[in-house]
Length: 315
Image (cartoon, rainbow, N blue to C red):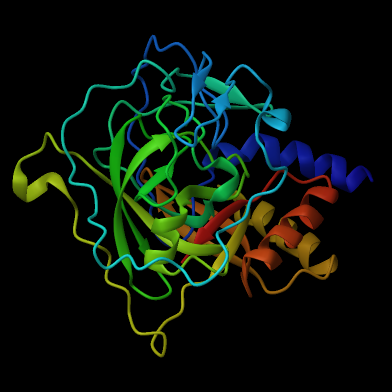
């Protein structure tokens, strides 16, 4: 127990050096803040009651636990819709919404900062999607959620904004309009609409490894949208899920943590060197893990050791 207490203190003093996995995520400064009225969790709405598009009354003042008609999410019965004639949104300059852009904001005990724009945003991680439970209800910026449009929820991108989402396991890509907040599962980077999930193959599995690239409609045409990432054929490389448990300037501390994880029967455990901000750090990672469910299970086991919540890295 003393060892764990010492290790937790050690991690608290060193995790300021933590960076994600082999792919360098880019999240621009969020120093700008908005005087917006509200923000809420994914699939949820803003600050006043309004009627949803489904012909029912959506009381956005209700808590998330009792606001929706269904207690669990689902997708329509039968085969997925034919999306061949559904156009992707064309990015355009839009004013920030009055609702959903409060920064910083807190959900489930965690605080998030909204970025001033989508320019330069590039992050890999796990995508999920949401469907029938939220269809017709208000999004965080008080638009109607339509699961048959190419939209998405983000914890940090401004509302509205645009992003390209690419499935790193099959190379399929879609441009989405960000109009909601979420997902507030700690290890998810974006929540796709049902249509977007179908288009890039995140449905029916439920989750997928993706890269999210912000699009800046105000930039020159040749710089507006970054090219989609090159995804090699599965026979050449399959992206893996890693859990980064800590990053240290002192290699001895990294090896000490790695040995603790190995003793607890986590495998494989690696110490990977990286240069962050001109400084050499030693990152302790568990993986690659077989799938998202395995990553969620191992995350819980690591936290039960008294260690900080690990960061997901897709590499």
